[in-house]
Image (tube, rainbow, N blue to C red; front, side):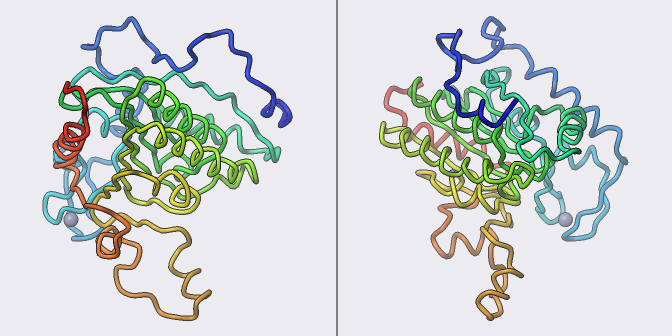
Length: 303
Ligand SMILES: [Zn+2]
């Protein structure tokens, strides 16, 4: 695909490009086949893991049963988008949104395509964000989950398009939207086109918001760069997982720029709540009930 093709109007043979995939599938079906790939990848790794905070060694199955949260100190490990969704939504209610974005390599980076293909195989994900429609305690909602394991959750054209698509779908169907962010920022392999995704996603949020939609943003570790500077911080309600790194530039760059030492805990969820940037910190085991409550409080029609 050439760059010029990106600016051409899309050919829309399909009247409704935003219908969920697997429309005919029964709601009781398990998530998706790509989930199996992710599980397989997890299993092939070592059996034990060390908590980076309290240094205790745990069997991975114990950690897994505890939603990837350290049973000793509450440290939140990274969790795959599929497992996050599975632990969050009503069983079998998740349907992925149909939004395939063709691979583009605007800077003609010789290793970029190979890297993307290998990450797709390794993670079972198409890109750094996973979008779909699901029910939480009976309330239907659009969900986007970013993965820091896919090129550090960096936002390129595909991520920008998938997030925008999810907001447009939520707007069209008058559904709330919940976005779990995890990102190192804009994707440098896509140059200026990745920065344009900030404007694009922000415009989609704005339009959704003007039409009265509810947007709940959940910041997970790490949420930085262009994602923080666009849709991640535009939520009506902003939640965060404990001790997540949330910021734009890294602390070292800021210290060098302002010539001052930064306070302890700077750019962590707890600091962000104290300074009014985040509304509430929600541990992973309380996420489902918190989101269910918020959806219920903002629902006009009941379930
Ligand atoms: Zn620990």
